[in-house]
Length: 471
Image (tube, rainbow, N blue to C red; front, top):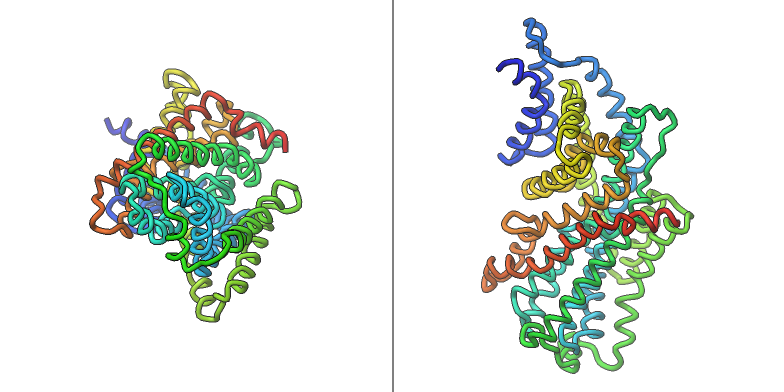
């Protein structure tokens, strides 16, 4: 019994970390504290002569891990993309953009919903932060949709689903972090297979691979809204254009408002993604372009001030510090997990599963989906992916395909009742007159669409891998 428990120490470590996180303790401290406690337990048991499978030599590489994290050029994109997103949020670009899209599509049945989807797509590509997109769209568009007679479940479901696009549409911060972790896992998998000149996976590869699935989801959302508007006009009625113009305080042609709202963010996204796709810049360099462009937009909108800049820099520093502190805690957790023989244990478990690599992938996707109820994408990326990534990639999976599958899977998890993060974000800014059950009902069709996308990616991996192979 004792021998079995000692061999299963990596699983006990993982379960303990999940339990501590569910108690509400800070993520970085939970990871590092639990790992250190188990490392101390390993040293203690070995000093007492207990045959615990703990290799203390792994702990000596911790200083190098921390140095590698702090000098990682790819991770420099994180504070710059966060800065870009916060600047766009503070400069009210989203508000102007939503006004323009509402004027363009509001007179159609389902038009307001389509406007929300398109604005959410552009915001997702601009900010890359799910919570920020959901809250912003909830505050700006939900009152208008309810006022115009939209079904509460359809309105809230559309906003939630659109907000989670920030998980998959580049330049997503989730893809930046996932790309760095998967690159390390990919190289580790190749070394374990005897390849001493391993290939690399860049964040740009994931950005390109995510384009087709992300745009297909946007198209699916729009088709669904048009079908609802056609089959049930009362759920998504058309708005009177003149009333909309008066409400928005706009007179004359709609084109000036449309150009003012649409052109700046589109140009910014084209500059960021275009520089990556064209090979002119790495994602890190493109993030600097995006941050500078967002600064220019804030100045052009006359929103730039010392007070605003101070708040933006402070928010960026807080988010960046949180990410890097979690990175360090996750690195320590990964070392202790491997010191207890966790990598070999996971490898043997996957090899023993029925169905081979297909069965192992299904189990991993299910575990990640369930963990998405209690952990944010940062924790899952830094805790789970380093454990399962090398094993799955060594079994022959394409790293780009695996990264996109994980991103879409987490996007679906964040949308699924009753624990989806996007539901909590929207509930916080939704009027009390809209019941929580309406939000849950509204997201179900979008969850089905995202599950269909996961199935399509599984059956046709080229949806994620074709474009990167061409570019």
